[in-house]
Length: 500
Ligand SMILES: [Zn+2]
Image (cartoon, rainbow, N blue to C red; front, side, top):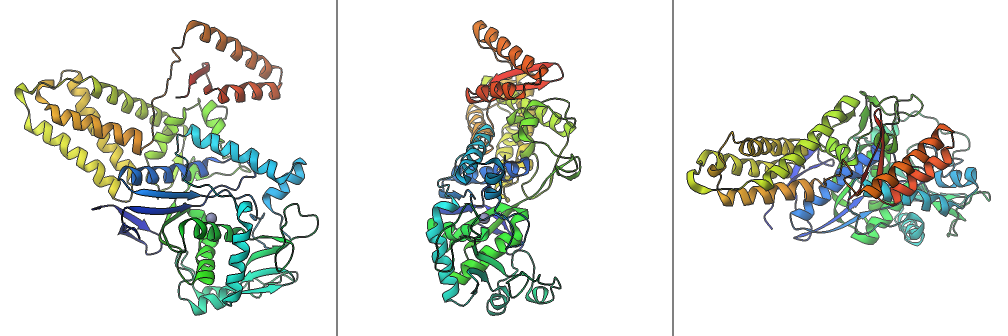
């Protein structure tokens, strides 16, 4: 398969041609969410970015096994290994639920959100708790190869020995052996590690810990980094094509994953490491404690002091497409308003494109070759490390031509029918299949009875809100969402639309 696609590889710091291990096939692993709370917007951006990457690879005809895990054990609060509490376990204790109830609740919420943003499901979505055996096997292999040590039932990865033996430590994050050795952070008294940069791969659990499994070392649970090494190996093999995730995972998570894979299998897990960039808000890092944050729900409803109104999921997806996945993206109300307009203009351009009728009486060579060249540019830009903002700009140049023809500023008989057909095909495929956008019904246009019923339901919801009966208001909103109805509260009242 001839392919011009270039991917920016964090390992080399360069754009490299994509050369799959097996021609025509790609194995891709992306780190999924830790399901102890609602998925936040920054994560949504990461998963939408990898959805576009996945969609473009599919569009190019690759057979892809796309694995995205669910972290339901092992992700600890803070960065210390021992004494810190597992995030799922903690939430379960606080809410007096089974850990699996927590994981189930937030996994469903995550799936619902991914659905709202129109992302495709991965081929396999493995859970960390479903792969304890694989993780124990990996710890054994790491110990057998001399890269781990056990202290009182917990097992640690020996980063210093690894960094000395293998010259690959720090490839992703730029940390070097000298940096590790010069680390001045003193080990705390209760710390069992030989060195501050060592990390736990098996953690002995105290008896109050809710999630524990038997192992050769202790009743405990696996370290967070271990699951991705174990599950990528299980489903994609020891060596596969692409590993992705949010940029914040480069260190320590991904660096430690590489170390574990070498430690257990003596080879690098992935050829290409891809990292998305951060979502900012009003130029600053999102932070709940500073009030500089938004939930996806708030973004849909506009229920936040940061927003003048609610925005539809596709306007937000469009907003994300407007920046490259490796650039930071700054979320502001103005930028969202512009994205909403841009999305509507793109959809209107598509509808206009479908209505064009060619007539080859006075074919205009320049016009046809301009359109041909724009179509080439779209794919050149997507081939250049998935440059969606540039490809989007090409589409808007097409929209200008389409609208000029539609408005009779250019005669439609200057357009060749084969150019038009190709344009319709390319436009449709890029916008809907690759970018994953879809038409949204902005005005409901359903029959009269539905309108009246919806008015009644929204009135009841408003009443519940006025009476501060938030439980009832949420129940109504959730039930509507379940039925595929998106409700948006704006300054001019509440609007609703049917999700398609
Ligand atoms: Zn991971």
